[in-house]
Length: 519
Image 1 (cartoon, rainbow, N blue to C red):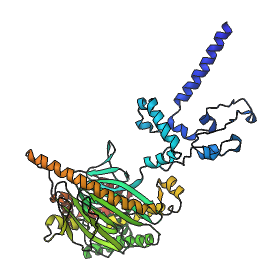
Image 2: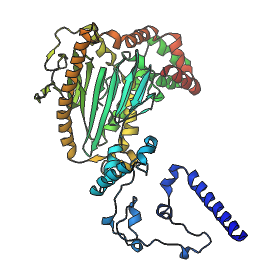
Image 3: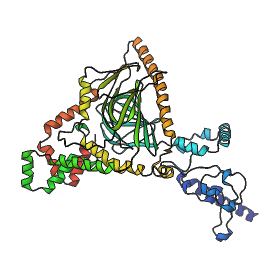
Image 4: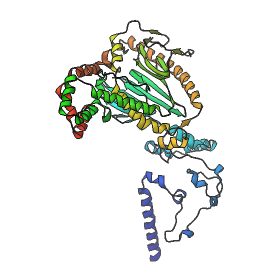
């Protein structure tokens, strides 16, 4: 009797020990599980390798990794297995949403039966689920001067230099805040103060990349990468509010330091007396060298669809400004286009599918109801100053070329392989279906935004009946801080406080960048 009790006690200790070990294993360990672990089999560590317990399986088996159903001695045919793919970059091996899993839903037998019935009718359900749950990487924050926030679902977080942006993210800037965003195809976006932009889709094919972006409110400057050589323009940079950048090698002060360290005292004095722009010359030369080198790389054509409730801007290889404020008029201007670049406007209306080709580099006004547009006859100061802010941005364009080589080109090199593009960069490779997707989005967004615009107008009418007024119109709020920084820089351009940056060592310069390049 005592032996039975002791044996039972010993067995319970073994079971408890095994259970404790199993429960203490983190979820991430399941990524490296062996076949025996997946099948729930155990091997005796005291047995020889040829005496291990081997599975004898037959019939329909649901294995996830492909190598689990390719062993001849398992007697499992591939056509009877549920196929899954290798996780794309950013995905886990497990497709269960552990972070949002509800225990009650997890144990709900009715829900399980419903899901099981659907899965049995859909052999490729795992592939579809992986594709649906993958939010692809759209771009990175180049600079945020002020306070920028990303809204990802119900979560809100502050962002800074190098913060990633994914599909479905909404970037919002507060008062006196400017954000520069680098998109993965090399396009730059400048998002003005009190603005909101949603990054809805990025889709790649071998020859094309498509962006779907929504301007919820505020100002957006879309700056497509320009392959043309940058002119030797020594005028002061206009977006001083965003400088210096945390890309240290792109700032003009970086070139000033290099030149200062290589000069003699006599050469330094002569340069100061003559007010020579040797640093600006070196910066522009490097920018053009990057352009020449990047132009030699084969890269896909970039298309965009920028929508707002009042109108959609559609095109490729073009830069433009776009204003939208709820309840008010919208404004846009085609700034310039590269070779083959074009810009079209789509207005609102359930049956209005026409595209209006924009050839003039002039300001246009879209009516409140989104059904008509016209050229602005008398350009206001708010619109003129908007153009000034992005007229000369050589430091930002140099950063654009540097990041184009660092972040964009590796994606371009993998566009011939769907598997490499998915596992290395986390993107799905589209075929000729991408053009069909583009046409669908053009039609779908027009109808949806027509409904949104009517709903917004009805809301304003009800608010006005109650004595309120929530309509917004363009004002000077989007350029006040930037214009102030530009004018201050003109005054302080040759002061001793600015010139002393040239004399800093690497550590001092790094601290200076951190101090002045951030908020």
